Length: 345
Image 1 (tube, rainbow, N blue to C red):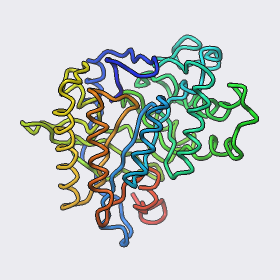
Image 2 (image 1 turned 45 degrees about the horizontal axis):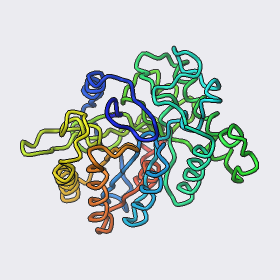
Image 3 (image 1 turned 180 degrees about the vertical axis):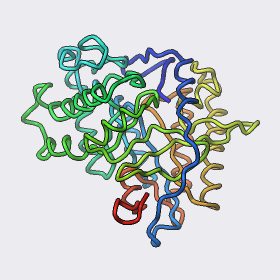
Image 4 (image 1 turned 90 degrees about the vertical axis):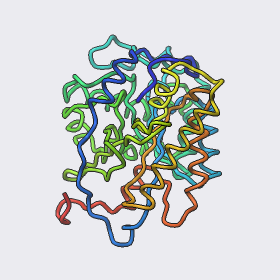
């Protein structure tokens, strides 16, 4: 769930109230779904899928890519496109139902910041990571029409496509950037995990392959209808009382410290989070081997406790036999989900 309160890097402030975020968590829990077919050669593989929402802070781009190199993992970065705009060109964005140039998460501070972010995006893609969409201005779209969702998706595509030009660096745009912006973005996660059927229809119409905005009662196989796939972040057991919590740093942050920064207990929160992550992994690795999905943000909450726990997990498990720490896009490819006409769902 996306950060609503507390310290945020890069002068970005999330303005949605905490209570709404928690309500949306509960409202989006999906019922158990039947497993799609797996190709025999991948039937025993344990997938670990780590993703980051927002993808703005350039220092955390550096850090996440370094973690990937150390652990052998590949990530999905759900990018918010207003971080590719400065306030000078914010009028190019008009969110559904909002004033022109408004964003819940702000904009980039200056053009050099945007350029560095674009360089990270391009390099991460070359390193095998996936760039996906988190929309633009981080608004709650639960009440949006299909036309509204289509407008938001189009705004994302345009912002990514024209990003170099808008900062006056068109000559520095890498060859192939436009094709990447128009064709490579196949995944989406809704801000606040707040979804409706109109969103799914808009994603399908825009050519997206999957949505990763769902929540399930435990690690679950992705659900497939036609050629569109839905992934659910799982509830996992955490803490001394083994209470379930969405496997996302923000939800752990709320569980541990009420959504208020408390770095003095960072080591304790790290241990609790690592224990929850590892237990959830072990249960699947030794059991049905459903994909384990873990969600994070480009904000180090409670002194970086959750990022440290994530890195420890990846360092411990990515090299194990039959474990694949991959992006959503690569997990889909390796799972060999059946397509219509092949006997799929």
